[in-house]
Image 1 (tube, rainbow, N blue to C red):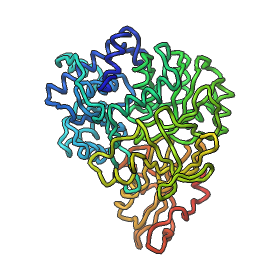
Image 2 (tube, rainbow, N blue to C red):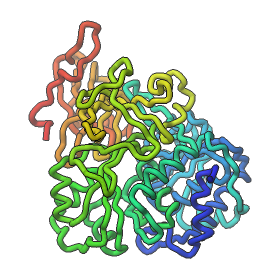
Image 3 (cartoon, one colour):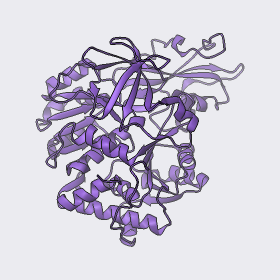
Image 4 (cartoon, rainbow, N blue to C red):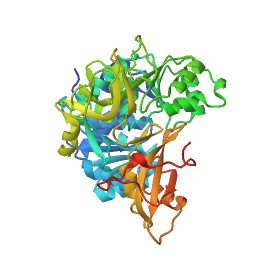
Length: 501
């Protein structure tokens, strides 16, 4: 068995070197070229002093360079720290400082935020600019072999968050990623070298990494990319490249289903669609399947579980509204607040145990202890299980908002709101939205004698956080509801009719 996640590429390149690995419109990268790029990235990093276990940030969109850098870092024995390209300076600085990243590969269009954030953390920035980057790699030594790693060594640190507002880095090991790619990817949906996978999911996210990039590379399939999802462009790519496997979040299916010109495109090549990231509305699922003539298989997971934990398996009964049953090698149960397993149809918290569960949170033993109990990962998601072992999500115990498949952590946005000179108190909550699932909403109490309108506050936050995080819906109230201890009771906050869509 491989001991380094990079060996997925090394082994496939040796067997299918001339096959297309990554595609972006007319730009096609074969497995041989992808492997050569990774070898040069590894050589560049080792030349600059990278040691096994050192962290390296990747702030790239869905372009072929992502694969070269990702596997190059791993080949050199480094740890990948994937970062959203939309992060602002302060967010970049935190990710790099907290992880102690030595280098950051950043896309040229986002160089300003990357360089400013890296300056504060003392991280070296390597700008990825088409043409110039190839020249940089051409002058770098070639690292032909994957550095041997222990399966328990960390391969990827994926930053996630919680109600504290401080992002935490989930340490995913080479074993986590290799096994989840196998049992939650290639073997689960029977991916082969003949498949073409649609790459709209961000590769900096665990869903995109495991189910698109690593799954595709392990199988020798082609991953055709789109840097930013747009329904018309997506269907154009599906038709052009004869996409067979579509991995997406519910908002993508909703957008394609409701695209006015969708009947112009021949998407009959699709044979498998996978949905995750947030709950798939049953009506969207039924409507999409009827319109596109294919089946959507819904799964469940989180960054801390690499991410796939359960799935509506092909060939088994599929229950709409259910996240299915655990994948091979994974156990799931529903527990009460004391950790006791609950009987069927009783609502409790999902707990997960298996090859997919993270090592822990980077440098956060206290936070790790809160969610890892005797080998079980407490997810914060509330669900019940039926008599056949199928799980049904009810709600999230955590306050996280899932906006169009992107996780937004209320506390992080509240911290920024409190920096506004006119804001006395603020609470960020999810507002139901037909297209996105949830929109970010903020109930704001202004300081006495201070004045601000929703546009002013919205722009203030927008300048300080990634574009998908700032609150689109803002309303003002006299005071926030509080309990006897003074804690804000978000469940009692009323969303104005004008904000709810």
